[in-house]
Amino acid sequence: MHISSRGSLLLLPLLFSATTFAIAVPEHPHLVTQGQSEIRVAPDMATLSVAVTALKPESRLAKEDVDTKVAALFSSLARLGIGKKDIDSGNVITRPDYTYSKNGGSPTLNGYLAERQISVRLYDLDLLSQTLNKILEQGIQNIQQVSYGRRNEDELRREARLAAITNARSLAEELAQGFGRSVGEVYAIEYQPQGPINPSRHLGAMATMASKEALDASYVQNEIPFTDRVQVVFNLD
Image (cartoon, rainbow, N blue to C red; front, side, top):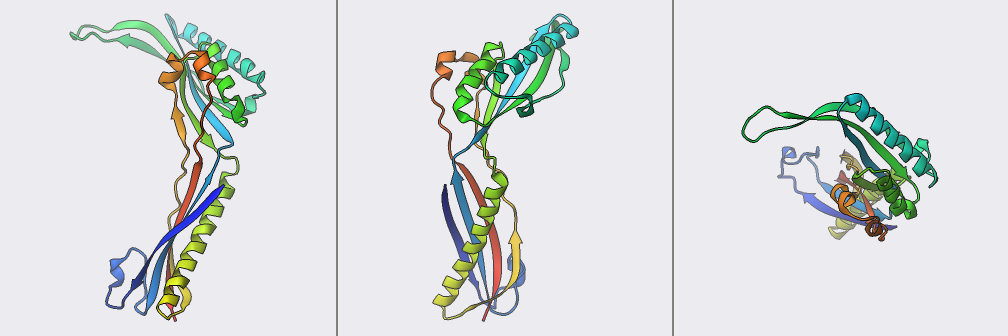
């Protein structure tokens, strides 16, 4: 795990109006710091997004085909130790599928398309290639995305937030000391939580075209960054 912090500081003279800044500032001497932090860790889980589809002359037949594929997929993944608790499967959706003529003629009904969205949570990344192969073996070609994550995401976000707070205060003390002043009490704090960053790999086209041998190749997971930022106004003593 790699932790880094960086920040920007701004000493505000009295002639600046408080409305110049988004954060509230006092009329007496003060210091504004922006503490930032970044924690980078290797992923320890992945979520596979899969669309199971079937095109049949009747909507009932399309639904049955999709349900059969999903049941077979569950059984196949169970042999890898992936249970139903780690799989989310949406309800089946059916709709007519048309081909539209370029010359504006009447559309042609191709049949009825049924679809179920499946999410598979994988907690052993060494099984990723095998899991993708199992999905393809069931005739499911639409592997849409693989998203990487961490099981202790909340803990890492708290760690990044505390590091940003520490960075903001240490920067304030360093700059104030350089000008022969000391940092007083906190006057105002502005905090906007950072959104989640989940590195993902879109696999739709690759999963459709690639052979199983190609999917057996090693997967390189990028580190996941957890960043945070806080802006603080300190009184100067």
